[in-house]
Image 1: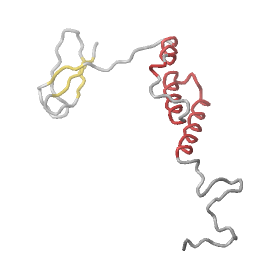
Image 2 (image 1 turned 180 degrees about the vertical axis):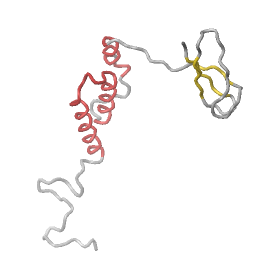
Image 3 (image 1 turned 90 degrees about the vertical axis):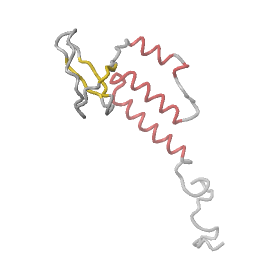
Image 4 (image 1 turned 60 degrees about the vertical axis):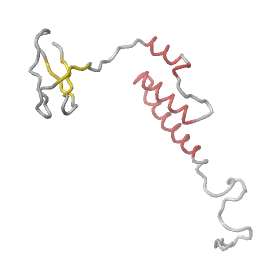
Length: 139
């Protein structure tokens, strides 16, 4: 017993119709505006893929998109794509790893997250003057 989808030519919204018999034509009337001017459209469908197909799609470098192993954001995008391909098979730890990698990627993109100067190893951190006084910004 198929479900057919139609798009209203007036309001453009999609309506689904359950049909009891294959040859039967449903009473086509838009649920939203009441128009009878409807056109049949292809419904979305899901394709079941084997594990081998999923691995093969990830092994093909042309399907990696803009993966740049030197760009942390790019690596995170690829990891998310890989996670979608494998679903729950990768476990909860994988989601945590992605979240940590994403946080580090954004921190790196913002300049390391430290405000001020060079580093905490003795360089200028922007926190005062050389004599230990307060910098009033009057220079």
